[in-house]
Length: 231
Image (cartoon, rainbow, N blue to C red; front, top):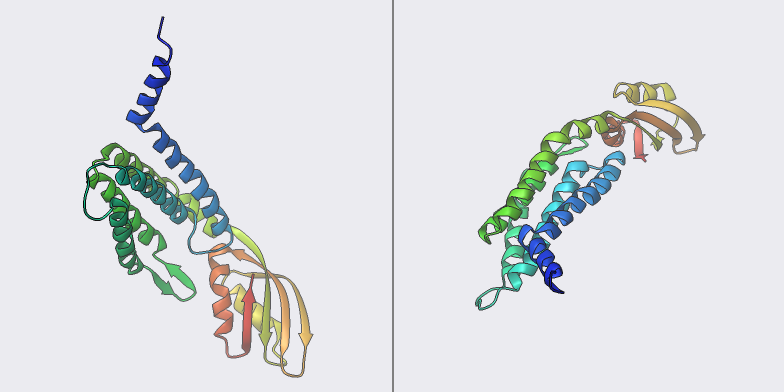
């Protein structure tokens, strides 16, 4: 008969050895980060599905490392958690260099997040947590490779958003409609309000998410438009 307390201790030792707690945390990070990223993606924000998953997974790993590294006995000098924080702060500037703005579209956020999480994996390897680093790297590779097509489909999915365009008095609706349709955006509904100083179009637009993201700036750049607000 197994002595009382032996089985619970064995289970605790197995969890500590295999780091099942960290594995569960990383899986939850994918789920939670993915849920937030999906919402941001559908809302047409530049930091979408993969970006949020990478950030969440990296933060989970760093949080675990900060606790474990801070508990190491007999260490002098700067706290390991402070070192990790400084590394991630510095790598943020490098990641920022990959972000560009092309018209109304922000590019390079996933690349910046990838740089950030690679730095986190490097910290794990430097601390001797090879199993944790390998598991995180697998999740990152799976996220980048498998979810790319999903993100692409989301960008091509149709979004329906309200829009307010304030133009010069007498501006014809057909001119604006033609400009919108040239970007693949359709006008589903429109109400026109005439004022002495302007003509305001209250619209409901439908089109690919990637085009909806840039149409606000496109409208603002027109000489016959005072202002535009999409969404």
